[in-house]
Length: 135
Length: 135
Length: 135
Image 1 (cartoon, each protein chain N blue to C red):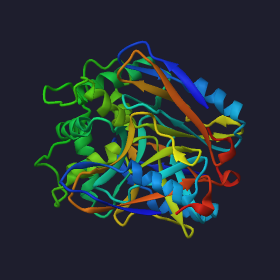
Image 2: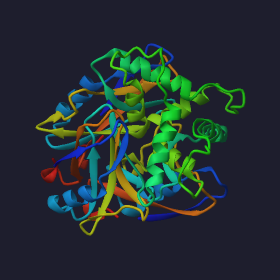
Image 3: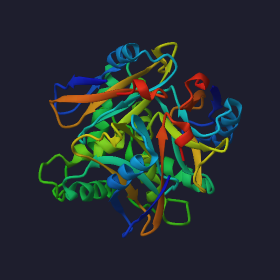
Image 4: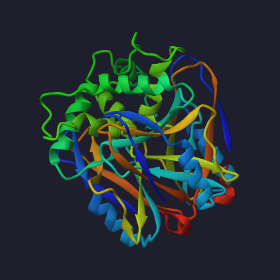
């Protein structure tokens, strides 16, 4: 099932936990897990703290220090740092499902990691273990 | 199935390979894979060399140089680097299973990556492809 | 199913998308996903842009700046940066499958990430959700 996610800035961690949870209910997954897959190359997905919004801001700030723009980059679109950050975060996460609900840890949220926005992005959510229901 | 893992330092890579292998036997997984999921936001999981303990020390040292503490971090708990490192390593790994055993590469071990210890951490291990046996 | 991948340099992103797609056809996976697993500790796997070869060169250059060799590394083989980069990229990716084909995003390719080559590497590709067909 495809989710459409709108980012509002060049770089942003968008909390998609509730929307992924809705897909779990719509797909009727009871036990197992869901795969959350981002089909882009300048946006990824990660799991991290959802309670304090400062954490996602600190993560973006840290990533900006880890991967800074560099005159030696060859890719002409100027978004090479966005590609690197995407692979550092990854293109998919798996979340366990139990009793028909996401089984995240207490402080965990699922984030779309936008590194080259603002844009409308896609996320593909599919059920592991029940191929007939997969996207 | 839930594993409880005790870390002994602020930062530590704890080798959990044997314990994950025991769960595979207990779950009766023969073929497929297991998902090893860490429900925390300042501890992750990765696969890397298990033979030489220097490798995990070098990895912690390298991560400390990649993500250092910074006065500009907003999150008041002072563990923002731990959150960043967790997303760099990731919250889950998947390990193939064959013949009822973990099928890791020759030099591979599974590590709980503690970045804000010492603490008792949880790991959730579940069988892919057989929802009835999943955690 | 095991793929053998030859890298030609110390560090290289080898595009394995077509070969993974062939395995999907050989395994007869129709819907679900495939797990692409690298059983090494100085080579990983990631998904990123495949259209412009400059992107993979920029990614290697960025990773070289993120993880540089350091006299304090203890591991005597001199490949500690390769181990760190492997965990930053990860040891597996999951790719959705639909209609018997890989369902990557438009610009996405699957890369073996060689960090200690040139060598012949293995990749294990298995079908999620259908244990009888898994490697």
